[in-house]
Image 1 (tube, rainbow, N blue to C red):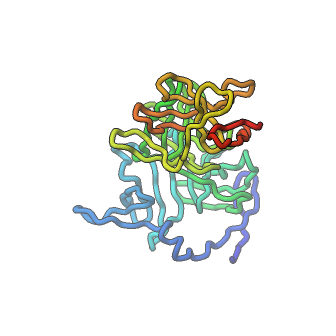
Image 2: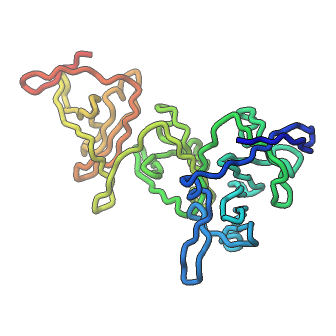
Image 3: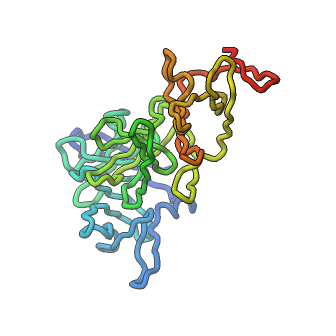
Length: 317
């Protein structure tokens, strides 16, 4: 890659290297190039499933600039390749600039200087000079990989699932989330503690998802819908077992046992629930005996059983 050194006129007169961007590979051009969808009114420019309209030959505005007050903008070259993207933030007070997958924002008193969004957290020195919707200078050497960004749009559909204790969780793309603070707008992944998962959702005042960070550290739950809309979890083979010296039968699922907590056989908690070390794992069945809710975040090792010839289980440890 060829590089050219120039003296930039930023406030502290720092020297930066302006890399000449090599031509995009064919597999990247599909992602970074404007596409056109045919409609009855002609072809509409589309980028990442969002529609835009040309302001001039190089600048495009989101189609909902006036109706939805969206400030998203694109700047393209003559071949339709994306040079950079201007995105509105959740709060709407200022925009961020997206270049090569990295986001830049104003982090000081100079409105014409945009710093990498990881400047404070990771000490990244990448920055842009931006004035009148034109990048005047840039330093694009980051000390970290590009972040995973999710754009907010009206198609963020989610479901609310009932939970034990008159609570509920949000099901979004097969992952469950719950509110971190009562009355707040941020939902953390249900496995934030057990799997150290940092995925989260942000809700607006109309209870719509305005932002989604979906980098999970674990696989999603698997489920399917029945005719009455309930969730049934396939692939989870469980059995009712009799344990010596236990009055009631237990459910054996993935080497863990669950004890019934209600007389209608719908709610089952991990057998460790009543011990000194409480386990949050639990199950819920519907009135037809279908498993409709699972929480398998155990905080202990599974017990060891020995199965006798008569079918009873004896707990060893």
